[in-house]
Image 1 (cartoon, rainbow, N blue to C red):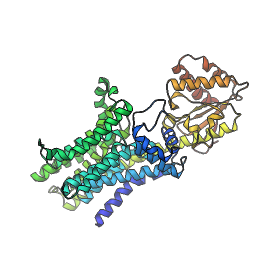
Image 2 (image 1 turned 90 degrees about the vertical axis):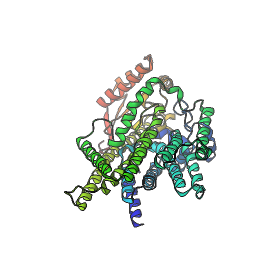
Image 3 (image 1 turned 135 degrees about the horizontal axis):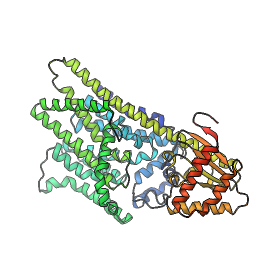
Length: 546
């Protein structure tokens, strides 16, 4: 019992400590629109989210996503204060810690690992750098929450199988309930049926039979999946974005899957550091040698577990990315559960193996513990770098938002304000960032606020139409003032007004004459980057300069 408590504590610390610094991190990117929309919804909206897209049309189009439970979670965290990030981040961290504990439970009850080895798996999951986007980013909850429900459903099913179907009906019902929550949290959880089938065949060794007794346990899961997909078709007109599944996307999916595997195993895409490659090679050789020296029964059990979690689970976790439409580390969050358990299996196999003759058992196990510590430490270092990057993005976002509000309120009403910020901080953020709860009042009612297209919620015709409309409205006002703000990646905010440099006014007056949206976006971006950064004076920075 004490060992289990220590394991639980260790896994919770591994999952929580790296992210505590994010609790007060400001909103970035999609957060502005997501939180603003959902936080203001009345509680009575919840039932309607089962039959409507949760983001409605705030991005200039209607996304094909039915996610009532994530939507509800933003209402709950907004009780802390819609404009306060702390509640949002605390829930994200709690979800990640719960997922790490579920990995611990999976490693013990499904992979059959000892407590120490299962703790290694849980801690590894908590420290994997690939999880940073899902945890440090408020909107990343759309992956941590469905993973929680998915893994809980799978674990309850396994426990039902192990306890005996006749004696544990409640476990089966819990599995169905968790699966319902998973489906209506994110559509990637439709892989549950093949995950259960593969578990029964590979790990539980249930032979496939053409009989009702064999088929019956899967029928409710199949019906839930079919009902969910049928609802998507009725509400959205498509089952799983099948209209987007072009031959080019299918051909590219192999490269996407490879990059996701790199993110899971090595923490990023690109060349693998020599030390990481060497450690992975040594650990792989030691694991293979230990498996080869094990007795036949144990070898088969280990190979089956590695096959399931190292191949089947990861493949099912990555497969939905085929229909995602874009690539993100978040899409590998569920798949990384399998890799964490593979690490736990490898640790137990090597730990339990007979040491080579030249080494005493104590020294052998000390080497194994050191190797595991190096792996976990390497992940912790990579995670620290990634979380630090998210914290930097949020700091720049907060600085830029605060300065935008201060400058607009200090400028004459009707001022044309050009705003630039790093895409990593403000992508999809405008115009939400200029409205409550991120500003005390609606700044767009006081000034004409324009941003480059990459920062706008509604790219394309919506962005172009709004920019041209605001430019025309500003030009019709006699003596309209111009203000430009530019926030850099390093956290400097520079300011330039038409009074400081008349060329700024001249350039702005030319903007309506630009024919195409691409050229308009390019001209607006050039004004901000070249003129403001080159001639504007520094008004605020993260280092305290002004």
